[in-house]
Image 1 (cartoon, one colour):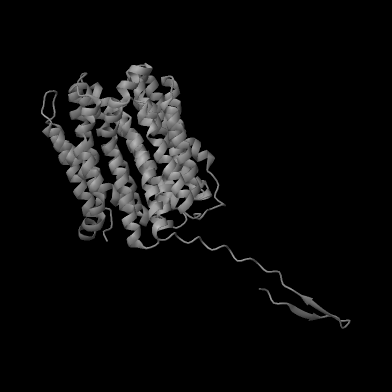
Image 2 (cartoon, rainbow, N blue to C red; image 1 turned 60 degrees about the horizontal axis):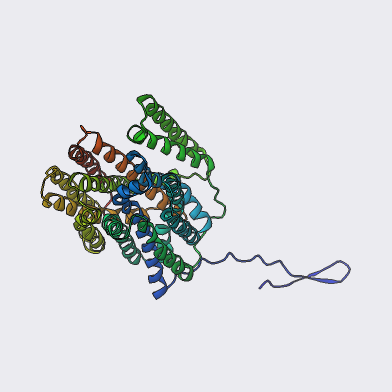
Length: 480
């Protein structure tokens, strides 16, 4: 409380002056304890599970969607790719908005939009409506995703608790990415393709309610402004490059149209880099990439998603088109990858990383992925299941060893106050990798002499190049 000051005046009258008290800045909200913190982490894992599940559960439903709603085969790629493109294009803006309004609010707003649009997808009367709803759902996901990883430092101040939380968060994502085909196969065969979108409603509502009740207000950067020019250029550049990749197989474009889209995309991204260097509050703060560990982790995240999502898409086509398996049988075929990817992240962070360090763990994951690509070369039209099963098992090991390490490095090397932006950068790189993986491996699968088997083998070789990049990038990671 301010103390009064007695000041005598010239005429003998004493004037009492009470200084105006300047209010202290509000203290940062304390992290929740005990049961509330565990519930909050459960909600973050639920949100992460839903987002990653949604990106892979659709693959096995595409033939049924086409049978029901009609449309050319190439248009099916937009049901999966349009969503992933919207996520990648708006994630940087979503991370900036998360830092501005608080990661807790970003989570609640994002999960509401994501869940509501999932219901809209399940009610789609036509293919055009479904594609538009999927793109809008991707925009909401771009707000939700950065808040998930961004809330972990807010909830867990201790480094050990934070590492365990990151491993559980990574487990939920790896499990969802691998479980998508299995869940999709079961739902599509037993209920119908619309059910794959309905499953988000109860889980999304539960995650919203848990965060609303158990997560205190997160810090906000109220002075941060949204970088509108940067966001527009990012959307333009990524969309143009995506159209260049899928224009020929899905839209029937000629070489001139593909070249024009490529030129527009490159020009927009060059302009984006120049704009970001001059902005006071850029979408992509250059100081994030001054840390070489952060840069290596983000690049590894891009390559991880390229391989995992690209192979899931290509192998789904192979199982249903070449081997003529039902959606349920194709989903069950992914079971080795599902189980390993779900179970491995926790022991990776608790046992392998303390023993091997971050770099060697990433190298081990990359080597397992390379072995998976070699085994995929044994898969043919009439081959038995075992080569595919071994390859999927090794891909699960690659996913379970790599993703938790990448997430932990990004959390540890993001400057304070930029947790949402740092998470947004990682997730943007990952979504971009997923878009490229589905586009490149999906296109290759049908373009090699009309043979999906030949395309699968070429896709394995392309994935091997990406996995070599993971191994090389691991050398840049500073071990503990």
